[in-house]
Length: 454
Image (cartoon, rainbow, N blue to C red; front, top):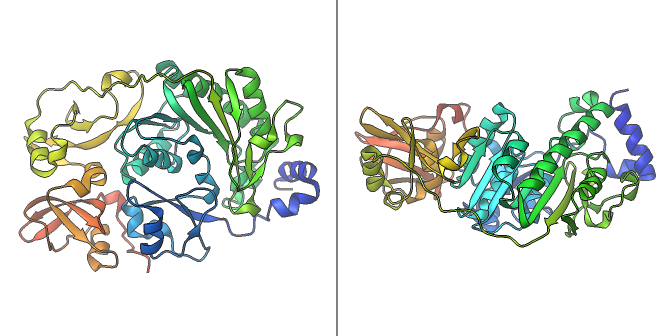
C-alpha cells in the first residue's frame, strides 16, 4: 500500500483524530502569499492587488488564496517582489524570531527563499542576512528569489552547515533552521511523495536535522534565538528532535511558541524523552496549512555586537562611479568591490567570507564592458525607486505586460539613458531610453512569454 508506514503510524498516534487532522491528500492544497514589507504594507496590498485574499492566521504579512484564484506568479506585483507565493503554514516560523533592523541573521537551509524573504524584510536593509543552501541548483533559485524581493544586505552561500559554524562561531543574533525533512506536510501538494515515503527516509532526515541543529547552535550568539521547523509530522524529526537537542545543549532553553494558531506538541511523540510539549507548535492540514512543526530556543548569556561595518578594498572604478553619480546618487558613497569585471555593493566585507562558497555578496550592481558600465537587474530591483530616471507604469496598463514579455515600451516620463521601470512605484527592472523608445532589459529567463493572467 502506498504510504502504508505513514498512515499506520499516524493512526496509532492520533487514534480517532486521524481523519480530522490529516485531511485526505485528494483535497486541494492550501495556497497563500506573503507580502514583502520592503515594498508595501499588507493592508495596502490587500486593497490594491486585485487578488481575492483573506488574512492568514500564521503571519502578519500572510494571506490565503482560494483554490480557483489566478496563479499569483503571473501577477505583475510578483515580478516586482511585492509578495512571495508561499504555502500558508510555511510563513509561521520566521516571525517568531522577532528580527529587528541591524541584527545578524542566519537562514541555514534557505532555498527556495520564502522564509529568507521574510527575514530580509524584517531587517529593513540594516544588519546582515546570511542565506545558505547546500544544494547548488537550489542555491541559484534562492539567489534569484532574494534578488526579486529586493534584499540588499543578503549574503547567499552554498555551504555545508559545519563550514558556516567554523567561520561564524557565536556570531548570529537569530538563526532559522527549516530543516530538510521527510516532507509529510507536502503530500497534498505532491501526491507522488506519499509513494516515495518510508521509515528509512524519516530516520535519514532526523539524523541530518540533528547535524544541522548542532551546527546552528554553534553559530548562535550568546542571548540569541534559534528557531527549528519542519514541514513533516514524524516524531523523530519533531518532538524527539527538540527534546534530544535540549539534552545535548543545556546552554539552550526552550521558549514558549505562543500564538493562537495550530496545536501544541504531543506527548506520545516524544519517545520517552523529557519535553514540555505545550511550548512547541504544530499546524495540521485541517488548520489552514499543509503542515508545520516549530520550536524556539534561546541561548544563555548576553549578546555582544560583533558585526563590523562593511569594508571593501578596490581600485577606483570610473565607469561605476560615473554611472552611480548620474543615475543613483545615493549609491555613489557606498562601499563597493570588484570581482574581475563585476561590481558589487557588499553585505559583508569580502575578506570575511573568502574561504566560503559565495553565490552572491550583497547587490550585484553590474558589469564593466569595454570602458562602460552596464547595470544588472539586481540593482534596479533593490534601488529602482531611487533612480534619477524613472518610467512609471500602472497596474492594468498594457505597457506592464509588454515590458514583462521583453518588448520595448513607449516612454511617458523617462529621458535618454538608463532608466528604472516601475509599476505603481514598485521596481520591475531596467531599460535604456533612446530614440523615443525604451529598450527592454528585463532578463530573458524571467519574461512572461504567455502574457499576464486575466
